[in-house]
Image (cartoon, rainbow, N blue to C red):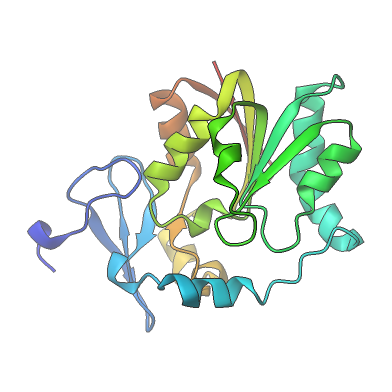
Length: 217
């Protein structure tokens, strides 16, 4: 593939991007500016096939193991948000909203949004004290659009709590099971989040290997 035909980065719009990896399923590219690794746009699933994959998820707020998993982002976020009731949004809540239930149990007023399972777009016209987006950002076909939407809904001093597995090296990516999910199309790294934080005036914290906390200045 020639440089001229390399796709534009779907996160920061840099062009050209670089070939990164190819497996039996699809090709991947990397942006030299923001470090995003992303799947070939031609390989993205149509909506009905994408939703069919999501329908196989069995998320349930009564599942204690799932709650423990989500608590990796809930606990540090709650520590920073404080005890006073706040307005929150869980973006990409999935077929069995659970994090929103946990945060509501902690005393906060929660809204949810998911393009397939909770598609009430009226919640997108409000601003929130905090927004969570767990195991969802890697599904974004147009991450620039969703990123700007998330920032637009966040109040000044508001918190954005993300959870996603991050790219650590090319060698690790080659054998990474995470990329094999056909709905995983945008792969962030610490460098990607550092780029976004600097560009968009956000403070940035990493909690463990897959939790990212950003605050609007």
